[in-house]
Length: 139
Image (cartoon, rainbow, N blue to C red):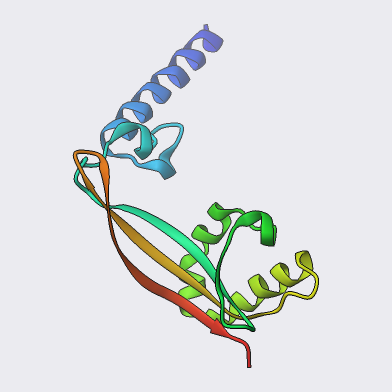
């Protein structure tokens, strides 16, 4: 009987924690709370945010830097936005990674820009605003 009681007690505990997490939890409560991305939706009129890495070559040309050019995935960069904003000198590692993958290419600056694209009824309007989040310049 003690084995059955233990199993029923554990199952009941899981049910209670899952119900509580469903009502009050967020992503960090998983698996006892819902993933926000699956339990909510954004307004079709709300702007869509996109993060860009840009480099400025020694010739002054602005280029967009993607993950294959540095070895860093977009999610890895976005996960560290706060650090890059507080310590822009960390962007030197992006310039170094770019240079390793593009022999002879030397970036004079690296920027992280956040763009907010306007939507109307879920469709892009073509308008956006942008904010410079962090900038590192080679000295």
